[in-house]
Amino acid sequence: MKRIAVLGSTGSIGTQTLDIIGRHHDRFRATVLVAGSRVDDLIEQALRFRPELAIIARDDLYPRLREALAPAGIATASGEQAVCDAMGAPFVDMVVTATVGYSGLAPTIAAIRAGKDIALANKETMVVAGSYVTGLLAASPSQVYPVDSEHSAIYQCLRGEDRESVKRLIITASGGPFRTWSKERIAKATAADALRHPNWDMGAKITIDSATMVNKAFEIIEARWLFGIEPHRISAIVHPQSIIHSMVEFRDGAIKAQMGVPEMTLPIAYALGETERMADVSDFCSLAAHNSLTFEEPDTERFPALGLAHMALERGGNVACTINAANEVAVAEFLRGGIGFNDIYRIITGTVERTPYIADPSYDDYVATNAEARRIAAESV
Image (cartoon, rainbow, N blue to C red):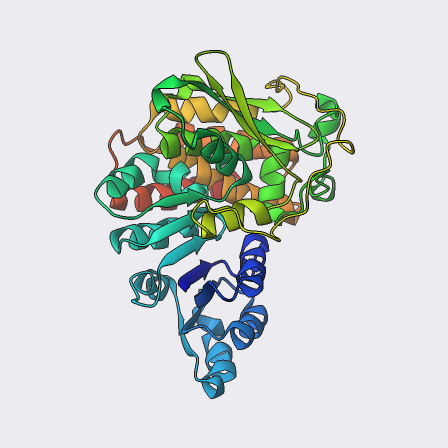
């Protein structure tokens, strides 16, 4: 029985993870559930799955959580430190990091230090502190299983292959809701427009990141650290149908691709099972129904945020941490209707220019950079 901590249990990835655990209750048990602010959803999940511990990030919501779960004998806690402490619990074998944004960094680091295996759905962990995290992993027994569909696809394509034979990683992108829009029309896009993703059902923040292609920039950065491939050997291509999730090109000219329907249950289950392919996980992909698979080069003039990936990797240091912080502030403001779509990119680049550069950051430097970049981005807003 694999005992699993689900960080972000009430979000899209978290709820799908719990669905898989529920369908395979003979081999998985959810022992820790962590949510940010959806306390009622967390209470409902805890009463169904009966974890050892339920944690709400917001301290002000803790009394409600405790009152609801105490009669059921379920331990409760609140706050970031409680989440980090739970990562070392003896009743946790694997941590599913399904939180959104910077908040996933500290508990992931705590899990690595505790030697727990990680199903990584929080790409910002590797974006913010990829070099630091890979250093920790090198000294830990922890194994990381990618959950992002693109990185799971690459991971699957690399299984059994000699890494020296890899020429290039090719990360696919749907193109988002604005793939066919003109530059002028994109400039006038609203949050409602950006949230209408053509293929994927995701949370609001990641859906906006998909529309700006910041998400794809982050995936390039994450791939660099997950797979140890140099930045110039990682590229993105637009694949509107979202059936091929990513590809690996080898030095002999062969390309391996992983295909499937555009849903997250398959990569989640592949990570939970540590590469075992379990039955009854995902819908099957009908090739006859998808008889036209097309590809396009990404348009960096209409979507300049894609270029942030290689800028961050070339400069290194704390630059990607700064980009992530500024993006989180800008996206939140765009969703509130306070800024325009193109202002997201302007705020990111302006924040990078103003945030002090640190070439070899420590963990404390990342924390300070995140705080300073958020302050500068909020000031820019």
